[in-house]
Image (cartoon, rainbow, N blue to C red; front, top):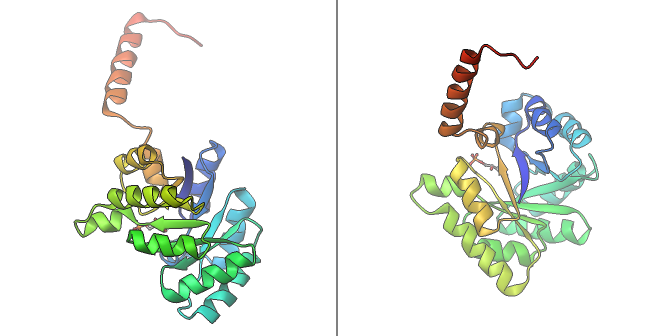
Length: 217
Ligand code: E4P
């Protein structure tokens, strides 16, 4: 499973990228707001650093305007994936831009039928939002599983980009289900390295080592 970083924080992306953990990046208007940066400038900086797909989201609501915005965003770099919302206009935009040979990430997906439509419109990525479904007491992981089965049933090559990931368990379950990609904030990716028994074990080793009175260096 590929790891995308869900962030527009260049320093946080760079830290993970230096460790070889970053296969791509996803941004959205809220993350651009949080970064306090200009969308074109920060996206270019991210694209120069990361070789995999970098999603940049359109903000218009009508297909004609979304297409124009998508083309402008795609001009930033060759590794841009234009992110469009899962609305009827978003699907029209997806079809036009994917026919042009651009990568398209269809976002804000909350149902298997929406995912089916995105695949038929030629989406490169479908982004089902796990955490936001969990927030309203629905099962976000079940949606990932349903989309996996549907795409496999019919041989769609749209990649499942599991999004709105909030916990380490979301990551494990997505990997078990067979999501192609997951996107998570830097804090969630870093948290994957932690385990209470790792901390406990290291604490004990450190104390025991001090008692030996030895040094390695
Ligand atoms: C995905 O591309 C979105 O940017 C993101 O995963 C949304 O996550 P959130 O629901 O935590 O805002």
